[in-house]
Image (cartoon, rainbow, N blue to C red; front, side, top):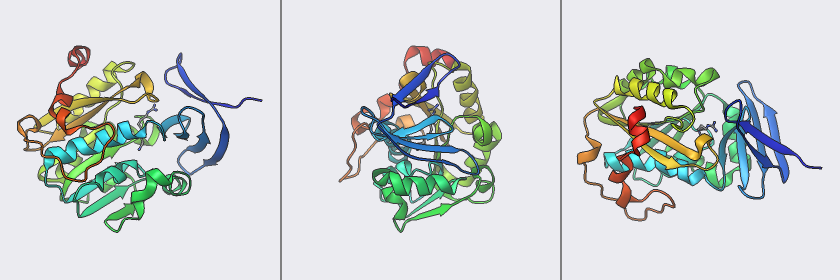
Amino acid sequence: MELWFSEYQTKNVKLSFRVKDLVYTKQSKYQYISVFDTEDFGRVLMLDDTVMLTTRDEFMYHEMISHVPLLTHQNASKVLVIGGGDGGTVREVLKHPVKEVHLVEIDEEVVETSKKYFPTISCGLSDERVKIFYEDGIEFVKNHKGYDIVIIDSTDPVGPAVGLFSAQFYKDVSNALSEDGIMAAQTETPVLFPELVKRIYDGISSAFTFTNPYTAVVPTYPGAFWTFTMGSKSIDPLSREIIPETNFDTKYYNPKLHKAYFTLPPFLEDII
Ligand code: AG3
């Protein structure tokens, strides 16, 4: 007997994994959590039948959402991660000499699931620099300030995450940042959802002085080609000298390409 898990990326396209072992499922207060092992992509975490990560390709996403803003800033000490309860982004942030990392995840069950079933991803969550808040990020940013970096590692803009893509939210994030603060957000795929990517871009650029999208290949996300967008209050990312830290181990992010990441393929330039 074969068991398959699928994500409907659109009404007409789905990505399916044959399940080697079903590891865990749970309906939390917010979403349906599933964990299963596959032959080709390792262990997979899905929320509401949407791929959050696979152990095979998660580094592509987590490294890019973290190192691009942190190395652009060059001097971050206080970092806020919104969403990202699996801990992959926090793990990458901790490779930098930061003093404090706040993780705001609405669903405690996601953190617990990751701690139990994804040790290589959740490993940073027990670091003494990390503090976890089980709250709604939309409210949290309204009353917590002084971050050098805010990273928005959200699900897609459906359900409770819709507000994490609004222009008002990006303004609140900007206010939660210090004077030279930088935000990086996951901003979906231009391959399948160009209008969405454009709308998100416009929201971010209404809240920041500098708005710089960049991209990465993420094979298990819709379109396999993903965007992130950096919003910066006063640092111009393109006029920055990028000095990588020592002991800095990455598999996708390459400091030699740092500035080139902001050079977009023409089809994406046409969209935004
Ligand atoms: N954040 C989810 C990115 C969106 C994926 N979308 C999709 N599969 N339709 C990733 C969480 C990992 N920390």
